[in-house]
Image 1: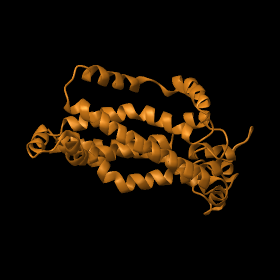
Image 2 (image 1 turned 30 degrees about the vertical axis):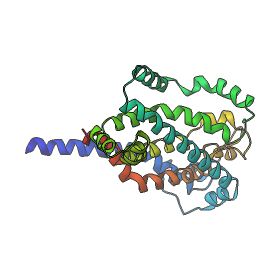
Image 3 (image 1 turned 120 degrees about the horizontal axis):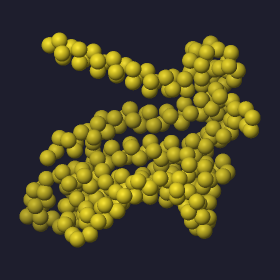
Image 4 (image 1 turned 90 degrees about the horizontal axis):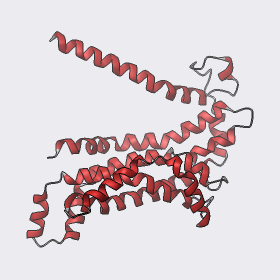
Length: 275
């Protein structure tokens, strides 16, 4: 009993330390967003704001914030649909069919996960210009889909491989073809995995900065991570205003995670429970 109690104390202590380390930047962001421009310089970095100063948020919202927000939502939504649909159709044959190129092709897809995105910035930039997509929101959809697809196929293939084959055999006995079995059995059973990938990929694309910086230039095409550029100059930056932008950028993802956290946990645990 004493060993169990000591173990709980150690785990609780480590969890509290991790909570402080992970929560300190978030607290700094939110607290700084409610401070005046020079208040952050005259008080401590983690000092509580002297008052609820909402001018930072009203000024951000009055600028191009809604345009940036719409661009982010559009790019993430379209890219996510393409990723999930493509991953579904790719993961099904990899997980259920046996053919000569199964392992080589799957290994090639897994290998692409090791390619750093910064190596591809120049080729992608040149390709975007040749396709006349530079400085448009459509320029981001291709790279976002391509670089998030390998891990999606990998996760979904592993998830589908654990679905009992007896379900497909029963469907075939009842007269279901491969397409009907896929849409009526495999896809519904893969919803936890799809929910997990949807949240994971959405967060990655929502916070993506490199491609958005390289492939867009004007405010009409930029996404939320680039909105902070409006509040910094060559030699100075309005820190509270930038923190207000970051706070508003984080709210949609926090809301999405709060709503879908049960599905995320089920999707993460489904692979361990099945089989």
